Length: 306
Length: 306
Image (cartoon, rainbow over all chains, first blue to last red; front, side, top):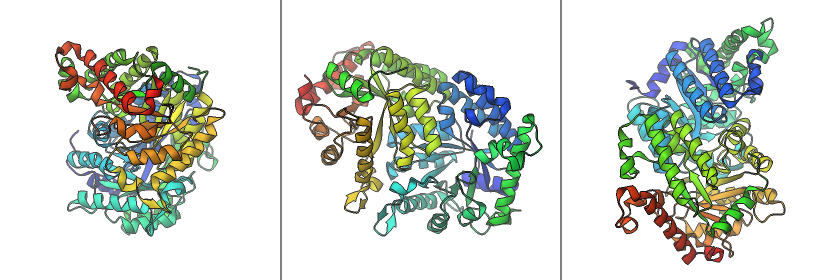
């Protein structure tokens, strides 16, 4: 796949055409699937992988017209071994076929030549995602092969800065010379974002900052003007629309907000699912997606996209 | 697979029976394969994956009687997509069949429920490795699902503490309250090692500290008495036997030293390969393995294992 425009340009175009920065997370888990898929639990990894793929394809069919981008969680597929990885490849292809951008949530990271292999696989090789998430613990030289792949193949990457979980306090919040570890990482991310932005507003390198940290989202938006911010943790992890407001610039760009469970398992949300039958779980997914889009438009600068 | 003994007990037993702490890294890369595999470069991912698998199986055949453990690098296989992951599964199975322990070098890490999926897949599910490497950036709660899987399924995990690359200075070396980030992580690792050790000397949770940092190996050995230390970077990355000495306790236990390229691509080392034909690349692998084992025995406490 050769992309003509940069990832940032494609993301901007997808967000403005769908009029929302909502991203649907694809996290298939056996015990949470809609009842019609529940037989899943008792099956072999190969059968379960096939069910995961069908489920995700049908989620994609439900949200393809509504959102700009989906984020498959590699771990859910990887837990099923090679069969799961094959299903993941099918899910990525289907999302592309439906006109969605694909952000592979891989959180990969390794030393130079190994990072190169990850970047090659995910960003332009066999997996062919538009962007991936990356872990910065190994340092800036470990990010460089991903950055180069982004530049050469018009892909994107999101570096973990301040993650949504409570334990992100343990190391990310440690204070260092008047700032924090995540502040140091953010400085590195912004430098890479600026370097890769060229004449565009945002670079190929973005940051992950959890919806559960509104104050830090504000701080990070200011610290990384050239970086897209990927905001997970919206919905069940506790983040509300008002919490993610600070991640955006005034024009409604600069952030992507992810919801996974609240959308793909919307069949289990009484306030969304009321009156629907078991086979209508995709309608629940659509309703939940509209609900998220509306909440973002009501309470964040994403209103400007309408 | 149900293991009767803890990972630490199985590792100790494998090291003492092979009389060496040498670990062979399985990092298949197209351009570096022995000439008889070189047709690889022009093939499809599926063909290349099959060649990677054959190559790694034959490396395993060459080293199975010599070393206790092998470390496949997930990235090399993942770069080929689902076909590569299938090859990786084949390599893990073959190593087990040949009586080797398998440490999957995955460097995974994610928030709770997602980390659970990684742990399930790698440590007791479809991949079935004996141990895996884990990235601590997300914090202690992100390590917990791996720890629980280790305890329930007698597996092991190695947390990145101070990695072998020069860029490990960027964040890992940042000074925090009189110590460093890697020192903070080491404190967390040691607490988990002690907790999982029970009545054994070492716990299920170990640390990764690069062979390129002899001073820090010394510091980390002292800071983490209950932790196995996995030492990558021996050989081409610059670490010598004398550099890794400090990673061991006096009885020659407590550390595993990894060499990948120097062993699996020994056909390209003139001093090892002298006089061998192209088809004898496995002999070069054996010679290089003996060479590493001898060097560790000559210059480190691993001498005590003889």
